[in-house]
Length: 68
Picture (cartoon, rainbow, N blue to C red):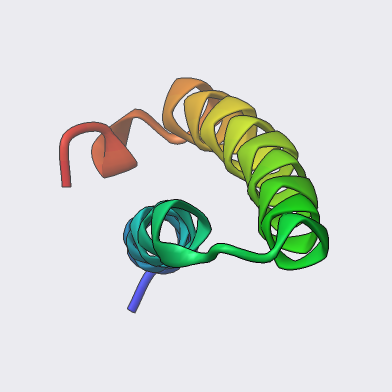
């Protein structure tokens, strides 16, 4: 498994986690719990953005990984 495919797999997993966190945020009635979920969503958003940027660099430096 290439580095690019591992990054893509990690991105897909994180986006799934982000969807789950959104669901939990909407289902939660406790404000403190909602705050924790929202904070986690913000953190995952930053990580996803960083990984997407890293993937662009990988694909630029190693064109064979593009689109795989």
